[in-house]
Amino acid sequence: MTVQITKMGSYPDEDVTFLLKDLSEISMEKSTTEREQAIQQGTHYSEMLPIEYKPSEEYMSLFYHSLEETKRKVAVAVGVVAEQIIAERGFKVALVSLARAGTPIGVLIKRYISYKYNRELPHFSISIIRDRGIDTEALKYILNHHPDHEITFIDGWTGKGAITRELTKSVAVFNDSNGTSLSSKLAVLADPGDCSELYGTREDFLIPSACLNSTVSGLVSRTVLNTKWIKDGDFHGGKYYSELLSEDVSNLYVDTICTQFPLIEEEVDKGLSEIVEEDLKPQWKGRKSIENIQRDYGMTNSHFIKPGVGETTRVLLRRVPWKILVHPDAEMSLKHIHVLARDRGVPIEEYTGMSYSCCGLIKPLEQEG
Image (tube, rainbow, N blue to C red; front, side):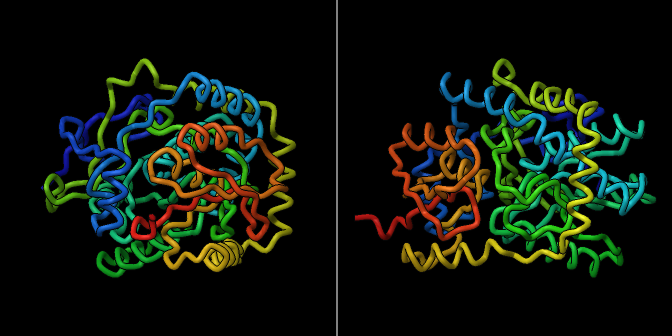
């Protein structure tokens, strides 16, 4: 059976192809509270979607400010990780972003390689779901259409490393089943969890695309794997929120970062030379932080601990947070975290027992009261 490629997302066609089944006409969004209850009662998060958070004017102004403030730093990290991909694998590479946080980063890496080397690499965005694996139909599609290309997987950042582990496991199973030898090495912009070999930086800094949901990721939802709508032979699903076009900043985000590419050659070279001197083998330093938090806050389930700026932001946007931990020495602005926490009435506590800048804690509902 041939899967259908549906034009999805607000990025130009040359930037990315989403390998997702279009579920845009289906209503599956649940309120934050409904969704949290369902997840904690055993429904898998991929079977439904959160209602898209509508940012306030104040929050959007913070996004624009953070984009202006970090555009050079993001561009340097893009350059550093892109150069490592090319040095390791050459130009016969298919970039495969993990939807959706990986998508804008994959677009940026593709754009950087186009700018620097005048080479156009194929770029796809596909689904991977914790505890359920990667979209094998999407992988087969890419291998069929680019049999002479190596696949490089791309994500935005690491937290605890759950997706890194899921990718390693899924790719091993796929290779065994299909007689392939895909590498499960994951390239990320930021690796504060210290669990990736290909990264732009290990600093836990604000990547502006973590601030928003679909409006900075091509207006595409989180990915969906629900047997009501996804049948054998289908890609995993997703929705295209075309009704949010007037609020979309996906291309503004990418274009703003790309303006920095002509200015960063020396910084990219410096970043690469520093990485060469480091031990690239992941040390998984974030694990110690998780153990400390579990001990100090009496949390038995590490799924309720979401470390790093990107994951903390996600907790505030679409989960029911208990409290936010902020490291007092974090050398960065966490204004957007403070605004979201204030809007949702979530307390913020200083906490030094972690290597991350901040961490979002979700309280198990059975502990309430």
